[in-house]
Every structure is written in structure tokens, then in C-alpha cells.
Length: 408
Image (cartoon, rainbow, N blue to C red; front, side, top):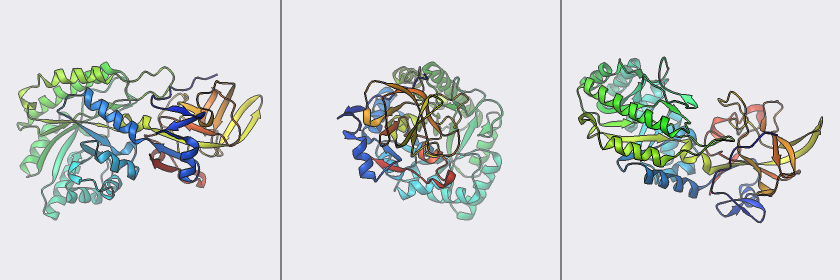
């Protein structure tokens, strides 16, 4: 028997079924026209952001990292909830523009920006988080050709990392950002060239559940930003402090204590050095804002026994939920939060593995889990599916195609 991850707070049973926003899983599937289906809850996203604002110091702006979930209706919903958006491609910029989001609220990071992407972003008024001196030169050349003043910031590769983070984005040799010792000269070059100097972006890591590690990293970010501002010899207009706030996926994971983080950051803001007194601060979060507000629903199409083990075969799988299958940055596969949606809250009766419909042994959604008895036609719910699900999975693998998505 292998334990399942913890189901996020906010879900309930209605008539023996999982309910999302007061509607049963079966109703939502019928509305969408079938499975597999991603369901995202407006109420849960809004509550998460409201709780975050209440915990953080008022001067800290909240940005949404679009890569977590770029679903159009969700982006439009986020426009009224967050202060800005962070993108990592020209495609994401096009999605935001299609959603009617002001490009002045957008910043663009990523180590491999093509000239066409830079041109589109500069022309729209997006802030570019430059990742190298070469990218800075190209951005200035494109801006001169367009006859516009570019909005340029520098992404810094710090000398530290976020302890315990799922993905380390700083510290040592990295493809991301400009090494801290090279950054001041590049900033002075941009200012002398007439660019609109927009400050720094320092992102050390992601998916951390250790509040003390995040507090330590935020203190390090502020100290590094102050030192670099002094070395540049110019005010620092803005500091994107990165993100790193994680969510519980696996058995034993404990939710992040944002109250402790917010209190520590408030103390840090109350004793800022002179070089940061007038700086605008923001954090960029993706999965923390939307991850727990999403559920992936898939229907059981077969029930079979092999060498005494029960398998529930679904019409979904890793082509929509790569992370839940254990094939998205996980070294040792562990079970995500999962339930039989049509028997939500029922007692476990058997040990069963939930697998997808793909012809590969990698397509697993739950291994040897304790579940209520489920049969063909029952719905399975995979939780924590609001981030890095639909857009981060190989939907076209074996010609399967994408899942449906709805925001309720």
C-alpha cells in the first residue's frame, strides 16, 4: 500500500460525489461534454490570493507566473486579482494580449528569447528581464530600429540558492540570468544607452515548503539587491524577488506557513537600506496561486486484475498530467492526491493502481493506493492539477489530444 498525497482544503462531498464550487463532478463533466477534463475554481483562486495579500506587507505586489497555467479564461480572471504577469515566451505574451491584459503590467524572462519575441515585447511596452549581455545588445538594437525606448531590467544569477526547493534557479553556473559580479557594469551600460531602467529580477528556486528557507532567501535577495544598487550607482526602481512558494503534493507534505513569511518580510521592509527605500517590490507566483484550485477528472474505462493486482484504467493519463505520473522532475515517484470522485469520502475497500490509456508503463496516476471500490464509468479526480498540468504535458503523445478545461 502506498499513501496518497493530501487533498487540498476546500473540496466537499455532495450526494456522495466530489463537489467543486457546489457542483458535482458528474455535472461538470456533462457540462463540458466528457472526460478527460480540467476544472479550475474561481473561488479557490480568489481566496488564495486574498489570504496571501492579508499575510504579506502591503507594499509587496503579487505577480502571476503565466507558465503555471495559461488557460485564457483563467488569465482574464487573474487580471482582476493580481498586480502583474510574468511570461517566459512570445507565445505567452500573445495569450495575455488576447485576454486583453495591459502589456505594461507584464515582464518577460527566459534565457533564449528570439529576436521576434523581443521585438513584439518591446513594441508592446513589456519589461524585458535580460538574461545576458548579448541579449541586452540585441534588445537595444531592436529598440533603436523600432524607435522606442525599451523597458529593461536584468535577471541576476545570485550566488545563493533556495534551500529545499524543487527546482533550483540560482547559485553557481546556471543558464538563467547574469552572474551577480557582472551585473552592475551591464546595468550602467543600459542606463547610458538611454533605456528605461526597470531594476532587477532575482529568482533563486521554486516549490519550497520550508518557511524558514524562504525567509532566508528573501533576506538574501534584499541584501544582494541593495549591494548591486550601490554598485550601479543609480536608484533601483523595482525588484522582482522571485517566488518559490510551494504546495503539498505528497504524503507528509505540510502547507506553507505564509503568515510567518509575511511577518518576516514586513520586518525586513521596515529596516530597508537607503538604496531600496523607494523601490517597488513584487513576488511572482504560479502554482501557489492556482495549483490547488484545479482538479483533473478522468473516467474509468476498464477494471482488470493482473497477478493479483487491481488496475483501474482511465481515459486520461500522463499526456495531460505528466507531473502526477512522476515524469516531471520527480526522482522517486510518489502518489499525488487522488480520489474516486463518484465515491468521494467513502471508506477505502481495496488496493488498486490507477493508470492511463497510453501504451507505456510510465502512464501511472496512482500506485497501489487504498481506494473505495470503483468500476467502469466511475470518475477519478487528481488534485493539485491547476498548475503545470494541461500546458506542461505532452497532449499529442500517441495522438490522444488535449483535455477539456473549464473555469467555474
